[in-house]
Length: 307
Length: 307
Image (cartoon, rainbow over all chains, first blue to last red; front, side):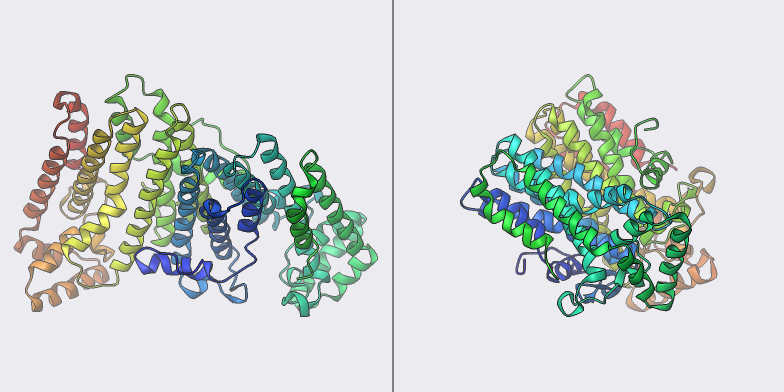
């Protein structure tokens, strides 16, 4: 996304350029373009929409990083750290607005701008709700697994689904396909986030480039935590929650890991993740499997990634 | 706007309800409805669009108040003060999104949703640019009058213009009328903001309900400051800027007021404000003057208000 024209004043647009050029996996625009490409050979007309979902994603990172007081993002300083908190607030706002502008531009050619934007606005509200639930979540000791999954469905999966659906709508796909791709993306998003949580605890630092047990060290309740907590008997839950707090306090994850080992958390997470991949595939029933090969192998590599 | 359904979780929607119910003059939705009403008898179909511009306005207040660290808004605690900074960031984001959603809904009936939203997105970006310029502005000693006016054009006037234009488009007005109303609104917005700055310095506290010279006491460079600064000779400028800083420091505005008196600032501001009203009226040339009576007398009362 380098070399695209940004506006003025620099103080507003420089943080936007900075976060856009930080890199990242570009998963959401790739999903959008792959969905579009199922129906249209040349993906050029979908590029503004692809940029729109990446703008949305980066907007949400910029604001979430302020809220979480995160110093680093993708190994570099976060925007509020490098520029200022005010810059991160206002440039984030501008990115959210630009997301809608880009979608409307993308949809102008075939008159689907309003449809794309309504879909995006509904998804965006869900994502805000997910972020709020995630913050509220940190204050309760005993979330259920279903509650946790609902948070990540809103916070993460929703944008996976919507990226695919936007691409399909823009390409003029049948409505049934659009809905199916949304549903497919939602399951993939769940699998993706659970894998994220898995890698945090069980991943190889050499591969992930992240500190092992980062969530534990920050006291962040992820999927392994929630699953383990709910599997334990009430007295053990108390002890486990206590150990989780101590782990963050002493910066020492071994006690927590031994709980995970006793509860076979790793294999449960992997099973759960496979279930989601399976459900995702089911959502595509009725669509031409051969046409789907590229998309399916891409999302498999995403969900089963080692880094 | 009470009694409308809000969503869940409460922690996201409660700050939105709070700021919506704080009151305010509701100028922007009124302008939108009056523009609509120039072409359509029943304004009911325009209500979601009217809400959209008020949502936008309140979103920008919520985020601006964080950036300015303002403790009070409309005599009550600001959102970041009453709830939390994170709540004000995220609930503000949700209001911005809801603004687009409402506009798209409003435009669905006659297929102008995309047109309304594109206009809004372009204006919204200008407003962000204006807010950033306003913050940058505080760091320079010697802005020109033209620079100051460009900031308030973007930060304030733009939304006046766009509210009128959105109402006109939604009502199916001819394109020339839509543009004329935008231009009219822009001039009104400039007059409105200059009056705001005027009242801050020369208004009667009994009428405004605000502390006399609030901008001076906060060291905020408003229109009287910028005009005076640029009228003075270079050595006097230095002294004036120094006195302005001291005024904030000592919480004592008399020295600054004597500069304003010597430079006849009050009468200059009033003249400037009349110029804008005049230019606003010129923008309406070609439109039926009788039809415009209600709108014109409303904006006159806005620009020439005493509180």
